[in-house]
Amino acid sequence: MKITVTRLADLRRGDVLLALDGKRYAKRLVVDQELGPIGAGSTVRGVRFETPAGSGIEWVFYPGQMDGRRMDIERN
Image (cartoon, rainbow, N blue to C red):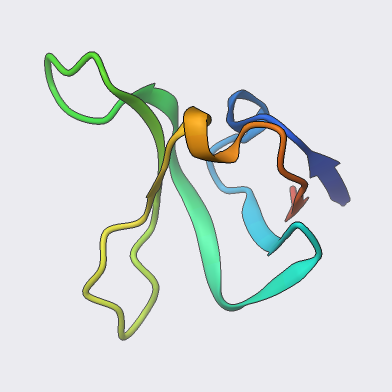
């Protein structure tokens, strides 16, 4: 099912981010960890994505940057 959310707290593990503010992503971004501390003992909260194939970059989105933006996702 395809849905649109505007808060990172609405993302669930396994969701696939298809587009951000109408711009489609070239690589599949799959939620690995729902909104929570980005590391043990950290007070910083974010959503961690699986690293796309061929990318050495760790993908983490933060509420201050993403909340309020339109995220089109696919959820099983």
